[in-house]
Length: 180
Image (cartoon, rainbow, N blue to C red; front, side):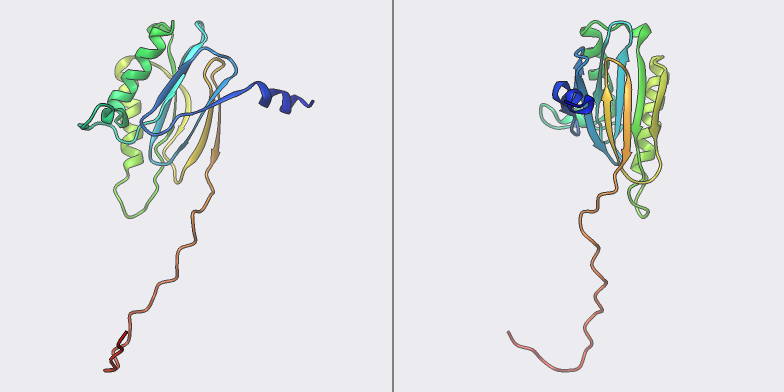
């Protein structure tokens, strides 16, 4: 069995979707997500060997329902920090990496920049150092994070959902009537 095949057989992949977070001390766990304008914080205590990832959609907002707040950065950041501390991490040893915040559409407000700015400000205010990552830019990215070692791997998302249809010319008025 090759080294790559052996590694994949032991590795446990956990997908972190929008509004979710996951914390672990298992060295075989790799956390993954796909980001566009969303931001993911990867947080760990390197001495305790515990860490995790969150994935938020917007910086702040009011949610309705039990888990609605999870999609907002302010709530998602607090959840991840608290769960890493509950799992044995210490606040004074926490290290963060930030990813995402891409500009996805030219014609709309730059939500990605707003998310990235929020995440950096939040961590600065909390006194948690940002030791790496990749914020802003254009387009999406796939992220894999090994919370125990702190290793992160990012790849640009180049997938296309479907080609854009060619613009359709408006019908020409000829005075004819079509019945169907």
